[in-house]
Amino acid sequence: MNPITVVILTLNEERHLPECIAAARQVSPNVVVLDSGSTDGTVTIARSLGARVHTRPFDTYPNQRNAALALVDTPWALFVDADERVTPALATEIKAAIRHDAYAGWWIPRRNIIVGRWIRGGGWYPDYQLRLMRPDRARYDPAQEVHEIVVLEGKAGYLEAPLVHYNYDTWGQFRAKQRRYAPLEARALARKGVSPRAYTYITMPVREFWRRFVLLRGYRDGLHGVRLAVYMAWYTALVYWQLRTLRRRQDQREHTE
Image 1 (tube, rainbow, N blue to C red):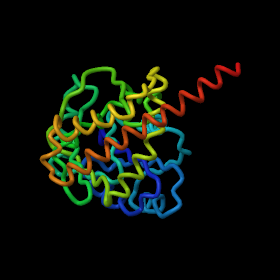
Image 2: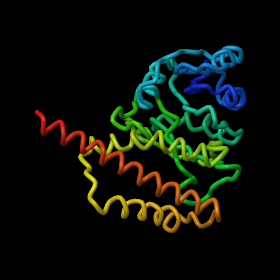
Image 3: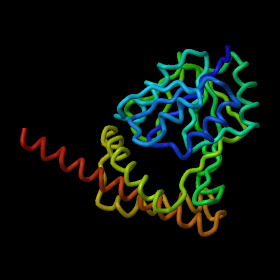
């Protein structure tokens, strides 16, 4: 019995799924697809390729991943997104890594391809993700709705071969995703008790641009690096404006009670 189950979360991923499953099978023939209501051919494709398919209405990313973990009946689980590809080198390294009983999980570097280019700076590489884990010793923090955090019972190691992520085809896709993520991150900040100041809407975006472009060497990627640093600064501004709205609503509720 293969000791790993590859888990793929999907929503309308018929374009990416065939290549994703084919690459994942280098690690294991056990593939579980947890779909959240696709209206294209995702489910049909997954079943035709031999994956076990389950459906669950989407509520939050950590809840979806925790539900997927509950479906795994092998000692190890590997999470792969539909737009990610396991390379032969990574598959070999994963098979070797799970022989180490001392580890409950492994961080995998991710190579982000954004608008046709591998981005090396700005925090986009190596972009470590905790994706290989023991299901009985891992769970996702439900409070972290975006950029999910794994709570691991035990030690985590680091792999060297990257997972390839075909992140965005266009800059429009990039901006659209940041718009979707901004309210989720704002809610996470609100739960932590963060309150924006009058100057925050300027200082935080400027700080994020400086962090991405200078400290994390986004300048190495030329014009791509500039655009990404600008867009992440814009995203930071969106998050804090969303947080401002949440705080005002909270103050109004407290006033009326």
